Image 1 (cartoon, rainbow, N blue to C red):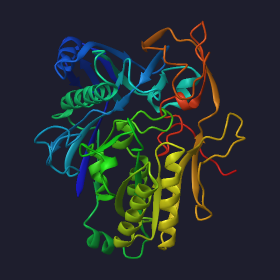
Image 2 (image 1 turned 30 degrees about the vertical axis):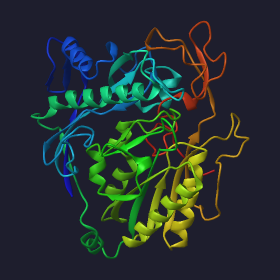
Image 3 (image 1 turned 135 degrees about the horizontal axis):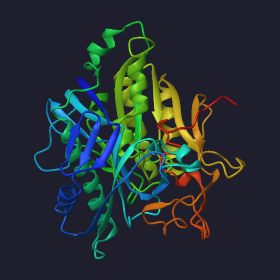
Length: 430
């Protein structure tokens, strides 16, 4: 598959009389977009739109999802395929335009206790990549009669549909830069660079129980067996988030759209490696399911003739077992592995970093210690609700102080220790 990605760099975001893209400026018709969102589901009771810009004394919480507006210009399908009836085309080829530097965020009285904080300035801003983006924030409330699953589904739909709507502004725009990505069918790809090591990516997706959901072409991945994707499918939104895991290492939909691992492997394709493609797999609850999925991962990697694999996880604790199983079985098959994870090593680094380990995991990249404590000053503006601070993952009773400041683990900051490396931390060899 061959995909051209045209980036339009958004440098200004504001509300205006109509929604439009003019050069590097996006204007949003607040009234019209609010009406569009309200029509998504009759159970929506309140919609509020805000803009949060870098450097502002603004706090957004609890953050549900972060999405990058994109639009298909040429080729089959639409962004985030498989969600709606009739949207079953395979994506990842043709041309896609991106409103780069802008996001759509969702917040409100959201379901899970594992949602995040984004500060647009101050020390917390240094730990989230989304303090440097121009953010259109949707505060969406739903009928209290909705159960937690309906609530999550409504907010997920609101975010994705709004991002698609805003992305349409870029359909006829002239891109500031265009990048081309291509992966050939397996036999052709293997033959393209026969002297380079054949490297693939094992993309572990969060699916370990209730409200821990990620979607592949609209299917909850806890219901799949591992499968092979063209990397370009991911750029068109074939994978999107719907989970309530800890904010620091949760992959919002934007992170899937811009997977650093996929982009880095493409950057080295034809230079250091022959990038063969992606195996997507799930993170399971039961031992039998973990064994099944890791068996399939090793089988598919051998079938494709990989020499080495990058393996990333999402989350911590239970998924560490899936990570180690994938490592052991790939290494046993003669496929070298590099593992991407983060650590929950205690506030002072005194605890065991991972719930499982293996001697074969001798090439591991840490994306930070999520238990590190940070003090966040009070902000002038709050988008959403700060009443969740004490209960979100990383918080404790008393985390929210009377003056509006917060003492909390960086686990609560969206993207702080993202395991794909989509964050502001730097790893160094100890």
